[in-house]
Image (tube, rainbow, N blue to C red; front, side, top):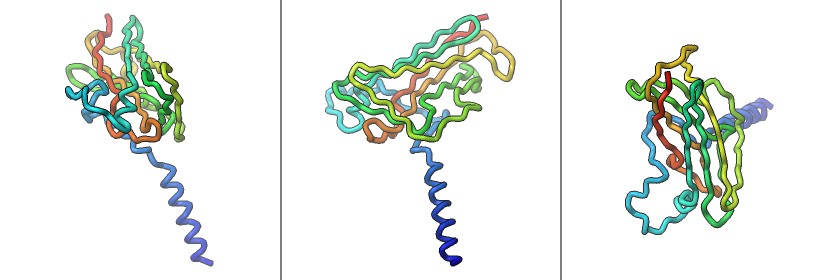
Length: 182
């Protein structure tokens, strides 16, 4: 009887551990990632697998600094000819990190203090479709407005699969500088 109870407890623990997985997603801001536009001069080479799928997607970021806040508009555009599915390992589909250009101090992170659903989220895209995301930052750090200066923002879309093929690097990431006005 005790063996059956131990077996049940073991199975429940294993299921809990499996459910806590991150889908291979790494959100470390310190790593240096490749950009999706980096072709390494090999545009003539035939792409296959996930690279061919990623090559059909364009990630655009527009940063608009205003008087009281900066707006980050993100757009993923499907420029291919076949339908595709983009999968995210949680409800968090993007990350935005603002840092001081000189000191590299992190001033804002979209996901800080947020809670996201822990479920796979799938977005279907037909040719010509766009996924749009938006975030904004009010220039505040610990309740105080940052000094007027130039800052860097790293904006990244964080899917883990396209058409059920794993994405191993970070192809949808852009770094942009912007200026906080007086």
